[in-house]
Length: 158
Image (cartoon, rainbow, N blue to C red; front, side, top):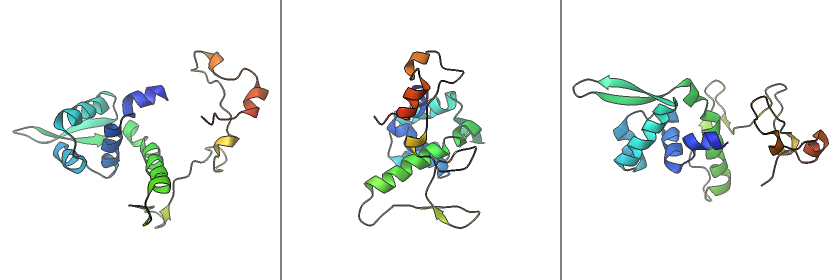
């Protein structure tokens, strides 16, 4: 989680990503829609490009101007951004309800994002998930040592 937050973990970066998923691509459009200062926008866009979340594509010569497009790595952030938007809609919307809804083009229905198991397609509840050491974990002491201990405390509720 810390590595991910180092790339996308500040307010402006998440708002830039939201705009990317709304098909905003040009610097001036980001600046206008977000009300963000040029130096901050420049810094955040550079960070996203340096981390291969966005790519710069020239759309004009003399002077050269670029637009920012999501890479496959950036597109993989869609469930993250959608989940954050949904959480805000559920817990922070006013009496009138959600400011926007999402419609699945294929079926035409408005939907809520749901996290499902990639193996059985069942919806996931954090109380039903065990966190186990994976091959890339350097320090196994960070997770419960006994499977029984892990089973009693699936996902930390902190």
